[in-house]
Length: 198
Image (cartoon, rainbow, N blue to C red):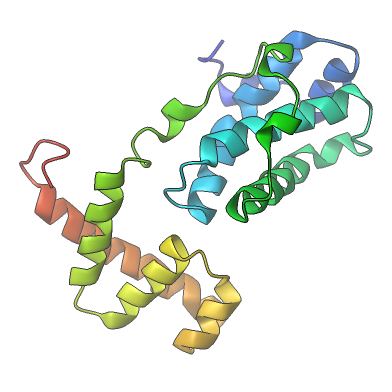
C-alpha cells in the first residue's frame, strides 16, 4: 500500500466520509496521502527538533479521532485542517505544554505507524552541527543571519524581515540564494567523503 501513486488516492471528501463510516483502511490511506507533505512542513518550521515524529503521530491520531466523531464540519478543508493541527501541536511541544499521553492509544489506529524513519537523517545531531558550522563559514553575513533565524531560531518571517530590513517579497529570494550557497558549500565539503565524516 505504501507504493500507491498519489493520483490514485481517494479525494479528501471521500476519505472523510469513509472514516466517519468506520472504514479503517481509509485511516491508513489518510496517513499515506498526507504523511510526507506534513513531515516537510514540520521540518521546515521546526528544523532538527526531536519531537517532530511525535507531533506528526499526534496530528494524525487527533484528526482521525475528530473525523470518527463527525467533528470535521467541512471535509474539503481537510488539508488546511491537518496543517493547522500539526502546527498547533508542534507549538505546544515547543513550549513544553503538550502531553502526548493525553492522546488516544496508538493501537486504536492500526493504520498509523511510528514515523521516526521519516526523520532519521535530519535528526542526527552531527548533521545539524555540521550544517551550523557551514552556515558560519558563509562569507555573506546576511546569508548566515537569515538561515540561522529561520531554520535554527524559528523566528517569524515578518520579524526576520524587520531585523534584516527586507520586504516579504525580497525575503524569499534572499533565503533561496542563501540556501543555494549553503548547499554548494556543503557539497564542496562532503565531496568524495562517506556520509557522516564531517
